[in-house]
Image (cartoon, rainbow, N blue to C red):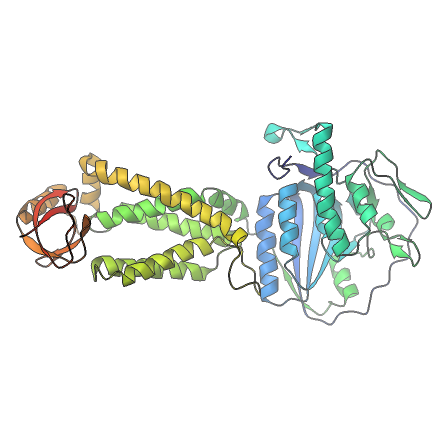
Length: 473
């Protein structure tokens, strides 16, 4: 079963372990020099908007060359797919990573904690209870999974968390006992978890030492507060940067969910703007759609403001090609490349210090969205070019978007006055292109024949705003 698609939740369990003996706190290596520390909140349910907060915080920490990243955790758990994504993001950070369990780290919270190098806990805090459950449709509550499905899901999650535990030298058996209810746990002759239960540890139990040489069960120690932890780690004098949710993460989630629609609106809006005189509603819709698209990428921690500048520069080059130097292709081609590059890279998850070129998995989602948008926009453009000029809506668009307050009747009179006038093709007409008639630069189209650039043409009619021309013998 694909547990990404199933959207399983890892919610906090109800099996809280009893208090154990007061452990001797583990010794920590000499304090690190004061530097820069970033603190990330892992709060409430671990759901998609939290990914945006974590991604933004990790990238800022990497750009600032921070010495340490501390997760301030108080959560009942959340979705597996979101948890896996957060773990992958945290792994990008090359400095020291810590988790401070401020109250509880149930299920998905425990998994994320294991993905850091050290775990510390506040007094009376708890960690564990990480068995997967399946939420019923609508989120009304948990429902029992078939045994086979539960076994597959548990196995997949165990593999995910085992990898992190091995990487960060956490006790693998302890972590697995938090996930798998069939896993009993006995260390140094002490039964810590019986088969059929899910392991949950208090701060004292997690810090208790076992084995030879003695080693903490899971936690490196109990500290009163985040400030006390910074002091313990040697970061009391470090520059402290706390990443806070901005409230726009949920908005960014909705925007990115409809990003293909925004691309379609942007492409069609600009297409209609180029095909109608003046500037008005279609162009405004296109600009707003692209602006919202880039804003969604920015909120998600993906796009940098620089890609917006590149996109605008691409539009300017395309406009230069269409209105100032038609038929040269250089400005139009360069502008098109810049536009495509900006639209793709604004949704690519790139980290500071990473590879200069994005990998294929990084490009998969933006390329898919852009391909769908271009295909749909092409079909819509063909339909609009054929039927829109015959509708009342088109005449309203022309009236409202024409330079000044030019009416539909005035546009029709202007078109009628052009019948029979001659000019020269500024670009190859195959069958559409550009022509100059007198002082006017016009969008023209033939009746199907091809006309070479530089050949004389005569206006014989109009199709919407395009002048219909024929080659003059």
